[in-house]
Amino acid sequence: MMPRLRTTASRVDVRRAGPDDAATVLLMVREIAAHEGDVSDVASDVDTWTAMLARPDVVVLLAERDGEPAGYVSAVRRLHLWLGRDILGLDDLFVRKGYRSAGVGRLLMTELAALAAPEQLAVRWEVREDNVAAHRFYRRLGAELRTKVVAFWRP
Image 1 (cartoon, rainbow, N blue to C red):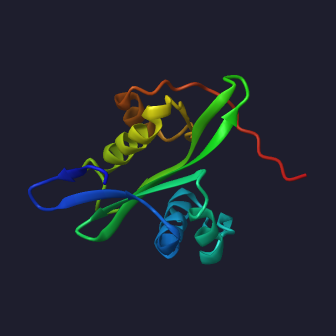
Image 2: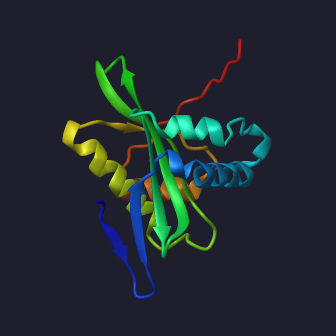
């Protein structure tokens, strides 16, 4: 079982999501898409998430406060050709409104790091250039931010 963040008001538990959590994960994926601009970008559905959460290379950690979903971090284990070894490609870190600025994001990242540590897996992700708050947060974690243009192609 993963550690818990305790506050005076409540407790936040972090656990790995499984297929039974597909609807909850999809709800928060839609919330982050809406927050970032367009929920129509989300093409997955509950069946898709059920299948993805059964895969060993898909990692979704759920944060729950008093049984309610507070946020998640998602990553995919994949080969990094330059390193010649696997890494965790972080896809999303999302904390729901009402749970922000309470240490939930840090707890999710810490738990992802704990999963990566035994195999010394690096964690790599992208962050929007205009998301200054995220830049500050990631720097406080000790992450190195590099500038790069992201290309996305649907041939």
